[in-house]
Image (cartoon, rainbow, N blue to C red; front, side, top):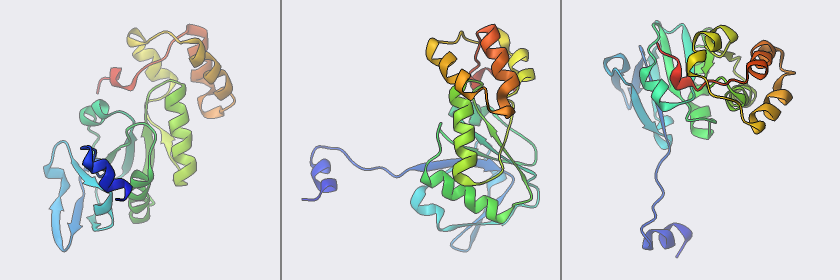
Length: 193
């Protein structure tokens, strides 16, 4: 028996990895067109099916936004945008979809919406580095942190060490200084649309 068969003997099965996305686009799957805008909460496509989809109409998309957390993905609705759920750090399947989108609409603005904490900043930096797509942060700034500070949590010692290492990142230095000074971080789910 190979490993897959052996695991199946014990009721452990490999499941496909899915990527969820939503927005005002049209997909072509084996010649059949699907209007994704008709699905309020979007669609999930398995990694093996990513190869079979084509985007037939991106004309209304001005922004592509990756979203770190599932709750925020379902709550987030942005006009003229395509939203992609990351589930924390991206993986090969999500990178493949993002590259397919970027190849189709390189002129769109690319954003990442994540937690305002060390993990969120690291996920953002990793996403930009590994996809080579010019992502900018979305609602991960000082104004957002201040606006929703009543929902913030205190930093742990590990948070403080990670933020001190990240403080060199010019993009986040202002918000990180504030976070360390006020002893605060913010989960993305606290940001109300």
